Every structure is written in C-alpha cells, then in structure tokens.
Image 1 (cartoon, rainbow, N blue to C red):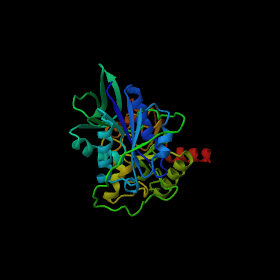
Image 2: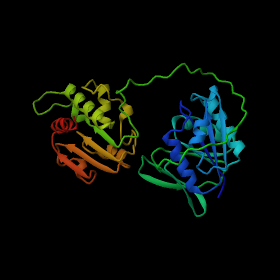
Image 3: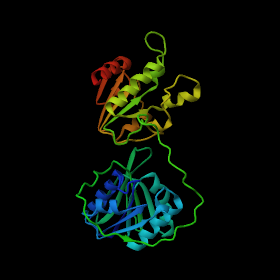
Image 4: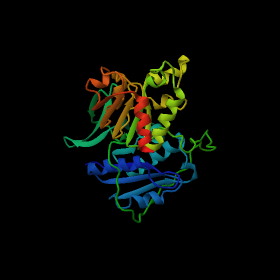
Length: 335
C-alpha cells in the first residue's frame, strides 16, 4: 500500500474537529504508512489528540499566519506538508478551508484532486474513491494513476477516530509566510440560540411551503408557524431544512419564515445532509426535494394529502394530519 498523508487544520483551541477525525478513520482503514500533517496557530493539542493513532510521523506548519482560513497560506502549508511527507495519497476532510486550498496545492505538485468523496477503500489492490454524480443519483468508484492524489472526504461518511490522547513529537516545517492580499479582521457568528443548521444533529426537521399558505380557517398563520418551528428546533436540538418552494417565496412577495434562507434548502439544488432521522412537514415529497434525503436513515412526514409523494414509497411513515396541530402537541409533550 502507498504512503498516506492526512492533512488536518486545527480549531481555535488547537484541537481537531470531528471531520478531521473522520478522515483519520478513513486513512487508517487503508492500511498504508500514515503521516499526519497539521496546520494552525498551535498544533500541540491536536498532535496529542492523535498521538496513539499509529502515524509514523506528525508534521506541522504553525504560527499566527496559519490560524485563519486563507487560500495563500493554506495552499502553501498543504504543499509543504505534501512535499515533506513524500506521500502518494493525500487525504483531507472536505471543510470549506481545505476545499478552497487543496486544488491549488495539487496543481503546484502536478497531482490530481477528487472532491466530495464519500468512501475511500482498497479495491483490486489499489485505492478507490466513491462519490456521487448527477445530484446524488449515480454513485461512481474512481481510481487514478497520477500521483500525488489528493482526496477531500465529505463529513459524516465515517465514524470519528476516538483513541486515547498521548504525548507526541511534532516535526515543525520551516515555511516562509507567502504574500497575502487579505486581512482577517474578526469572526461573525449567529447569536446563541439562532443557529438553525446543525450538521451533527440527530434529527433533520424540514418545513415546506404549506406552513405559509392559508389554513382551514382561510387565514395565514405565519407568526404561529415560526413559533412552532423554533420551539421544536430548540427542544429537540434539531437541524432545520426547507423545500425549494418555501425559500423561493421571499422573491415572490409572499409570506415567508423570517429565519429561513437558501442555506436551509434540501434537495436537488440544495444540500444532501446525513442525519439519522428526518421529519418533513407540509412538503409534498416531490422527487427534486426527496433527492436531498438520500442519506437520511429514517424518514417520516406530516401532510394532509394522503396521495402526496411521501406516500409513494418515499417515507417510512406518513402521518396524514395537520402539521400545525401535530407540532402543537409535540411541543407540549417536549416541554
């Protein structure tokens, strides 16, 4: 088996996040000689975190210049680590930081890169990458002869490595900070309790356009819909998704849910999450929307239409009921 380099960037506290530990699991499963390359302001906590993972070397590029995500510094760090390791296969988690920088590093090394990989395994005695095409309708298994071969692994595809921490020796690579044209002035994040997209949540709650339509009394109850959905998200610590029709309403002058945006969109033109369970409300289960549910383990839906798409084999359980009434009762029970 060829030598492997795992690239990982540290968080603000110097440790590795879950996507990096998932990529470590995938790297160890290949069975080759493993080198871990770390990038960040400080790397010693991360090195101790993976000290007992079985890597033959732990390389690092660190310093204040490498604390914040930036193409120039991240690409230079990835290039330096790949050259120093001499690895033929370079694996990294598909975070926004690496997804921006790794293709440039691969170009500098005359290598190749594959993104959005969902699995990496040995097939016919060579490494093979699995990934989806055509809006997650077709899965392909790819191999490449070109080396180095960079692979970005999507989050949620492997169990995170969970070995005991220990003491680790880190080889620091001297790297001149490349010229940059950007300055990091700070970080903006949502207020506490306002975050609705939670990739690690066990439950995905999806709201459809029916929440903003006229109800049985002939009136629109947008404020109540927002209260019910927010209350459930907080009580269940669930992640929020949306159908395309609902997020598009803001451009059509119709009633909208103020906390909903295109970032919440699930489906053919949106996200394809990997939560353990999914609950769809006021959606009709059309194919473009359901494509985003491909990796949801258990699917349930609440809809007044007994003949909607969810009833045609797209949901494990369909509750033919009014979503307002159902969520009122659920929120009372959870309170």
